Length: 212
Ligand code: PRT
Ligand code: MG
Image (cartoon, rainbow, N blue to C red; front, side, top):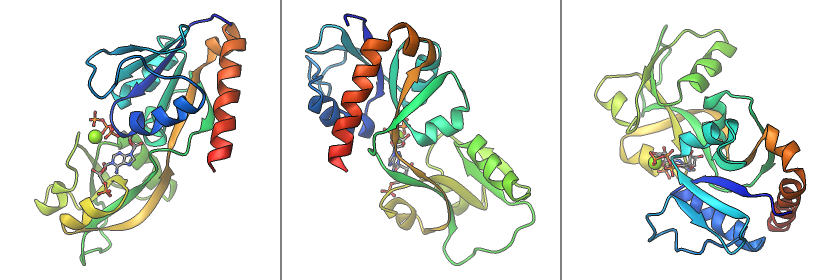
């Protein structure tokens, strides 16, 4: 039972929504994560620590066993396309939608539209599924600017309230996927540290069922 468990989590909305869930299973960071600059947070459980890393790095840490567990958005997991981890629980937090969007009032059939996105794999798969050719333009943020400046015809991005789209004169065209954050588990750790990890997963699933 004293097997060390490291959980990789990204700062920001996932961390904010994951903390109350972890508190429900009595895992509480010793330092206040809002104020601490530590990248490794010890918790009240001496065998559990939390790594604070970039959202897109979570699958890499878990697949390679640098962390046994991770919490990552389904957007990041779909884009990563790895298979070195299990995905046992939908935590139901940091929910949003992956949308195809574009300028208001100008949706027209374009033979080979230019799509700006940081989700190039998801976008490519989405259009390949119905045999549509697109030109993908990789951006790392502020995708909403691309159609305004004529850099792209449409964008693929996450939408929560829709306010960011609206503020930039864009509208959603199609929903590509419903997104929420998932618990992921390194495959080898599931076997090697099975008692500690299975008990962690069970406790977490119980509090999530209660929350729903
Ligand atoms: O910020 P950083 O570059 O470090 O990394 P990150 O942007 O990947 O992290 P973060 O914390 O911004 O997002 C982490 C995860 O939160 C994502 O991977 C999603 O799984 C989830 N999530 C849930 C969201 C949103 N909702 C969301 N609305 N991530 C981003 N957004 C952005 C969206 O990209 C757009 O710019 O919020 C804007 C739209 O919000 P609305 O409410 O105006 O529609
Ligand atoms: Mg961000």
